[in-house]
Image (cartoon, rainbow, N blue to C red):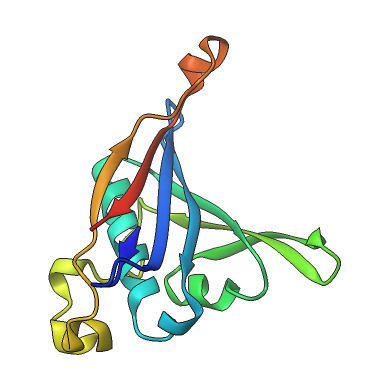
Length: 154
């Protein structure tokens, strides 16, 4: 999670790695409505993709809606399938993938983006996002299939 200096949530996102197939998935990438269109989503995506690359992932998968499909397309994801009303009436499910084998349109990492490129960083409203590992509770029957889960922290 990324918090502003007052401790309010500004954004969050995570990922998981599916072994041994070596694909990864993005989970719950969200930016607070008042924080959108300021580059935070791209930074969070960049950090997650960088970490998935470090984990040796060959492909990144996600499902999203028509509301954020274009965001992921700008970052190199391609549509695999569309399920009309997949989440609820009027909210379609878009399954998308990004190949990590070819050089994707890389999203910037936090280290690569100068503070003046992000309104919040320029104003000093946000703290730097870092990863913390969370150990999910997995029933014994599913421990072999358990994916590692990461979340953001400040």
